[in-house]
Length: 96
Image (cartoon, rainbow, N blue to C red; front, side, top):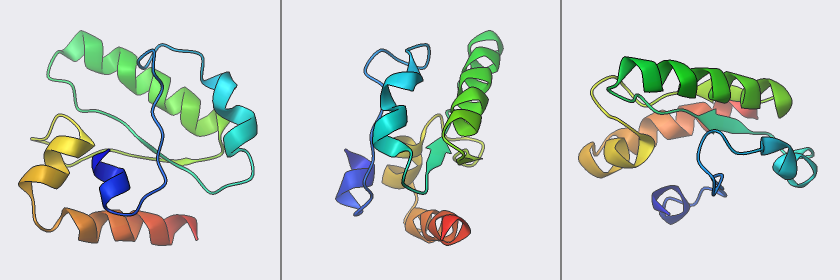
């Protein structure tokens, strides 16, 4: 929802990172995509989430980006850092 408030068309899997991303393939196949991963503090969880995010990036021919270290997820980053939109704008330019 935070990304949508900044004007991004965004979606997230409802079943978490382990859900079947192939369900989104048809809907996203004709768009330029950015997969945004999480910086989970638990190393084991983080390793698993990185693998899922990397898989999705390949599946959707997307670029994979993460919020800066120190922020668990993109929402936390956007809400805490007034310059977050500048970084997000750079990501958009990378896929255009």
